[in-house]
Image 1 (cartoon, rainbow, N blue to C red):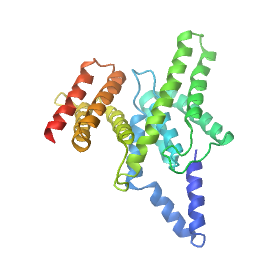
Image 2: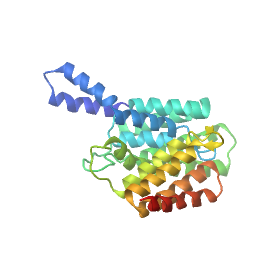
Image 3: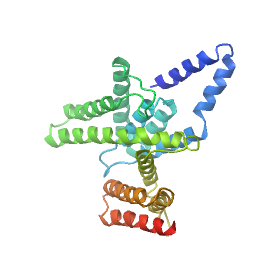
Image 4: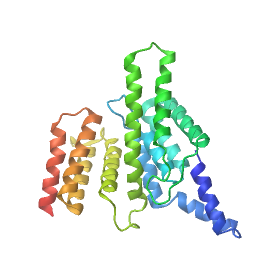
Length: 269
C-alpha cells in the first residue's frame, strides 16, 4: 500500500544524500500540497457513491489509479476507506479492505512494468479487476449460490476496471493543474467525470428545495463548454448526465438537461 511513498523517498535520498532533515521536509510537503488535499477530498467523496446502492467501484478505482500514477497512496487509502465505511457501513468497509489487500499482494508478487511518459505509469487494471471479482464472487461461498451473484461480480469487476482507466488519466489534471500548460480532451473529460461523481456525494444536500449536486454539476458543464468549446461541453454534458442518471436511477430527462447546458455555455461564450 505504501509502495509509492517508499519509491518517492528512495528518489529523494538519491538527490539529497547528505541532508536527511531536508528529505523529511520535502516528503511532508509532497503529502500535504494543495493538489494532494484536493485528491484526498475527491477520493473521500467518490468512495461514498454507488450505482443504485449496489455497486461501489469508485473508491477502489481511484485508489488503484493513484497507485498507477505513482502518487503517494497512504492518505488516499485512508480517505477511501473512511468514505466507504461512512457510505456503506461495516460490510462495505470489509469488502473494500479485503479487495485492496488482495490488490496490493498481487502487485507485490507480479511486479508491473514502469513507463515514464504515460499517465498510467504502471498497468494495474488487470490486478484491480481480478481482485474485485475474487472478493465479490467469494461471498457466494458463504451464502446460497445464485447466477445473479456471479453476474453481479463480473459487472462489478468490469465497472471497477472502466473507472480505473478513466481516473488514471483524470488525476493528472488535478495533480498538475496550473503546472502543465495543456491537457488532452480525454484528460479533461475524465477529470470532469471524476469531479461530477464526487459532487454527487452531496445529492442529499438541498437548499430551498434546490439540489446542490445538480447545480454544481451543471456549472461544471457550463464551465467546460465556455473554456473548451461546444464539442467538449456537449460531450461532457451527455457523459456526465448519463453517468449521474445511472448512479441516481434518474429519468433520461437528466441527460437532456446536461446536454442542453452546453448550448447555454456556447451562447455565453
